[in-house]
Length: 279
Image 1 (tube, one colour):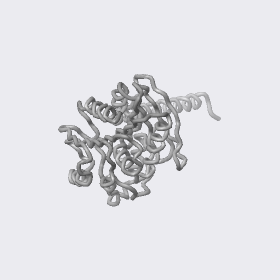
Image 2 (cartoon, rainbow, N blue to C red; image 1 turned 30 degrees about the vertical axis):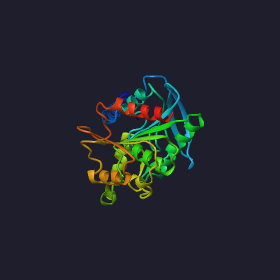
Image 3 (spheres, rainbow, N blue to C red; image 1 turned 90 degrees about the vertical axis):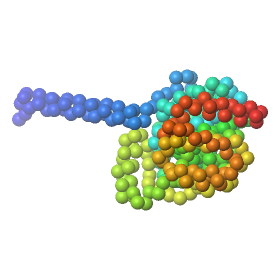
Image 4 (tube, helix red, strand yellow; image 1 turned 180 degrees about the vertical axis):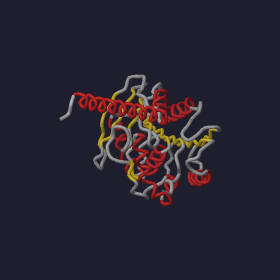
């Protein structure tokens, strides 16, 4: 028989385990917030859902601004539309445009998983652009960071249904994962901890490097960080050669991957100038 002492001991053990679980959960949240700070916009916004051609539900937001034109802001991999630097940029942009953000598949509230190619994310961006166009906007720009920048470049080259593209820290090529394939399960778990659902399959597909020669005659801005570590400078130079004179190019000294370090308003001004010249 279990006496009162055993009952009290079991209750105490359960309470201790619950407290440890709460502490671990709180620590995980603090680590995630430290590595990838997230927040909601401090200005009014609206949320809505989209569905891609292949059936993935995409969570999106609209920050109403001045109207007239629209800018879609596409986040880097692993982060999501609540990534604090991206939200800050969207808020700045909303002073002059209606702004749309969204979670790529495998991120945030969107469904699906991100694979090692850009076909899926391109379908996500296409769903957003199609919705924005259906709302009657005559001028639509895309500002993409890293993964978002790769998709913006590819979208402009392959589909062309946007009026201006700015890509910040967009790798011209996908990384070669073959030497590290044995580590991919561990990497996937770490990305899941950070909030991204990743599937180490589906290599190949379109790449910004290949699409550069087909980029249409629309405004294009390539922004490169002076301290970039996610892709080699020679890849960027080859892509710029293929683009020819079709792109503006900014290099930001001292900036790390996807950082703008004080050039945020310059990016807003670039979009304003391209929108005004089109109108």
